[in-house]
Length: 44
Image (cartoon, rainbow, N blue to C red):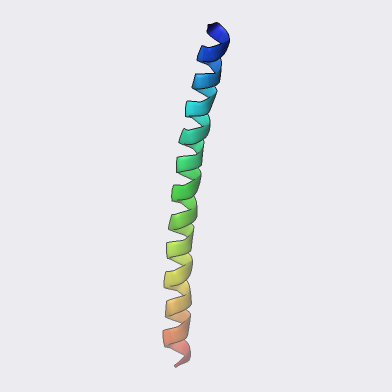
C-alpha cells in the first residue's frame, strides 16, 4: 500500500515538473520568435 502511495506521489511530481518544463520551453520559444521577428524587421 505504501509503495503504491509513493509511486503516485512520484507520478504527480513528474507531471508537475513536466508542466513547468513545458511552460518554460513555450516561454523561451515565444521570446525567441519575438527576437527573430525583431531581427527580421530590422534587416528589411
